[in-house]
Length: 586
Ligand SMILES: *[C@@H]1O[C@H](CO)[C@@H](O)[C@H](O)[C@H]1NC(C)=O
Ligand SMILES: *[C@@H]1O[C@H](CO)[C@@H](O)[C@H](O)[C@H]1NC(C)=O
Ligand SMILES: *[C@@H]1O[C@H](CO)[C@@H](O)[C@H](O)[C@H]1NC(C)=O
Ligand SMILES: *[C@@H]1O[C@H](CO)[C@@H](O)[C@H](O)[C@H]1NC(C)=O
Ligand SMILES: *[C@@H]1O[C@H](CO)[C@@H](O)[C@H](O)[C@H]1NC(C)=O
Ligand SMILES: [Zn+2]
Image (cartoon, rainbow, N blue to C red; front, side):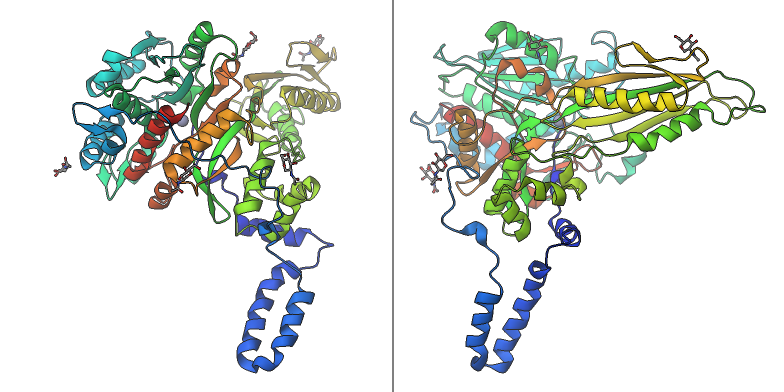
């Protein structure tokens, strides 16, 4: 998965909603802009005579705006910015080329050659399908073997000099042994698989999706963004360092799965187990996986480092009733009965923004640095007025789900024939669970909601745990509740001032993209392979190294859709970032 700009709050919309919503609030904030314009007009047309009056008016009539940029803020607590990492050790040198690694990354030769390697990796269609069987049984996995052939060909130093283990056949665990055994290893993650191409969209691609065509600075192809940019970036950095005289002090590991797009049970899970056997509980220093980008929020770019993920649950609602001939139907078939329940299921959870939610920390960064942020929202953030923020931000679907459990009724199936009464109706509902809640929020909610519904409709009800909690000897049907996939919200990784892993990650980002790059903690509404890695470390970060330049060079990265692409500059950024991160971490 990858989180692109879809998470970008739309500032204008919030502003409108906010102003309509805040009944008791005079509209002076919105109007102040046009008044300013009028004031300027007066100055021009009526002349200096009114200057004093107008100045008086401005100062005393409109005591507004720009409160965020006052000097008296506590800079250490609000959107803390780590400083760029600086290494005390010598720059690694490529002996064969007689050039330092950092200089080599910036040569035309490296750009040419690394582009070719990136394209070779993109040309292998390593698609994961929802219905894949076991590795070794389902032949569709074999393509990952082809990808490994490419890897062995283009990254000889990784395969010759570093320890490479094949886990669960196509998972890759690469260990670059450090000189100091007392230091916990760094773990970099990426996945080899990509999502399928929808047949119906093939003609909308500018170039065939596995051609990896380079055009006007962009590389087009499925996986260019999600996640072969990171995958190849990690390999390029490791290959470069492995071809130099560099030995890390701290062990560096690349843990590379092949089924992230179908939740990682075939590869991320066994990879995490292998690491757990080797390094134990909290035996890893830091994990970095895909996640946020450098994204624009309210006119300012932030490297949005995800420090937590929402939870996940697919609920299955199943209603069985006796079949029969359609000529003598009951008042409602099970389709009709289920239809009455769906609007109740869609009744939103009213989420509340709490200060512990990492999204509040993102907001603090916007308040401090985003010039285009609505001033009322800004002042609410600075006052930590979570009640006002909840009201405002829950009006917009781009912000509300950062603090509310979502509800999406995504699948319905019922009936087989137009002249036969349906015997079963099945509904699947997808939820992303608010970070401060847990699975029980949903178990309890459905038990209550459907319990009441079963009683009103004279139905038996079997709960999630298999217990029949409502029953009638003469019930008109059997309702049951179950789940497909469940995942608790992740722990929140330590971040901010004093959280050394976060500081070093932020420091590597600044080292690569410039000291002016702003780091913001973030919450992910989607999930990554790190779901299987929680026991290994408290410091799990999800961030895809893409620079503001790359963001501005493409319309959108189009992950998971047609014309997925990556500006080549962005890919070089990724390589440079991983290189700096490994080299400067200690
Ligand atoms: C600023 O925040 C830091 C860290 O939370 C705290 O130690 C310090 O006392 C605060 N300073 C002021 C002036 O509030
Ligand atoms: C960036 O910050 C680091 C660490 O604070 C400093 O050593 C370096 O000189 C800065 N670079 C620039 C270009 O300002
Ligand atoms: C880079 O590739 C282009 C096109 O293949 C080639 O013309 C150019 O000479 C190459 N440059 C270097 C420095 O290898
Ligand atoms: C409902 O449950 C009761 C008690 O377990 C059982 O006797 C009855 O057959 C069930 N009704 C239906 C329609 O399944
Ligand atoms: C972490 O360890 C606990 C206790 O051994 C185990 O129950 C749990 O499933 C593990 N979690 C993950 C994500 O591996
Ligand atoms: Zn991904």
